[in-house]
Length: 346
View 1 (cartoon, rainbow, N blue to C red):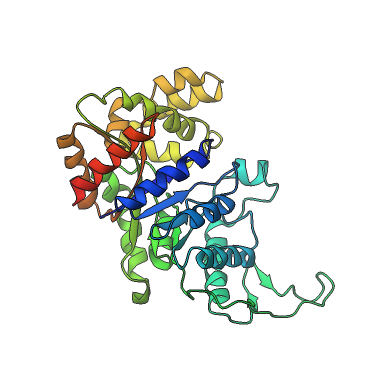
View 2: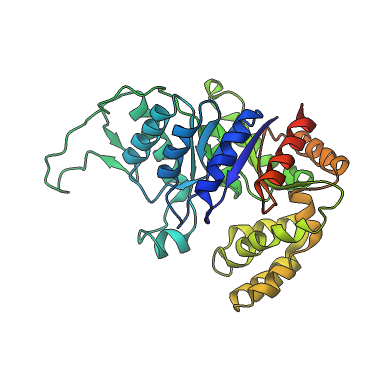
């Protein structure tokens, strides 16, 4: 099982770069940078590429709606170039609140658009002249749109790789099925290994049946909070604000993917209460309403023996990469947590 570090949305990136440099030395495999309505991930990854030499770098994730498909492909090729072939493109749909509320573009046809974006990216990386007549993207613009002067072009540069690995963040059954069919990797969130088969098993099986063998096995890249030791029980509380934000505030009532996931895990009553409190502006109470048991099952927090058991559960559920977020406020302890994780996987 591979290990990775998940760099979040807020603050401290320049400090985190030094941590990534140290993590590269101890053998951590990948660092991913998030993007929603924060700083863009691309500029930060370019900085990381200059400071590292071996560790894989990825977006975790960029929304498909916020860049044209060709720009997404160009950006991925550029990051793969400056990193010497170490880039992984993480894609996702985000949600209507971010896509429509911050970027001002319609949140429509997430499945169809995802499929077409992936297809266009791979054509660009193969240096094909880009002539694409999809349902959602038509390149060049068809007659009657624009000036009529557009012509099929291919990327000027020769990409380092014509197949840059693509990871898709997906939660819903149809999205997960599509991911298992067309992507190199799948990035679920709040992954509860003992419940994963019940929630996603059929979708993964259906997608895998249509998968091109050339893609290789699906890399299941799971995010998890991390704290290893005999005195880290209090760190469960540190993981609750993010869970509360996603379950309670990332989406409107009835249109929240994370609330739906917590419900499918068996925490429906708690999810309803978290959402009610969060949408009412009572965020502190919403955070307190996140059950310890939910945090415990989707994280790696506890004594070494317990964390070892959880790692085994993740492995049994098919996880191939652990993207962790150390629950610590100092670099030394974060590094110690990562070293413990590396030793448990050795």
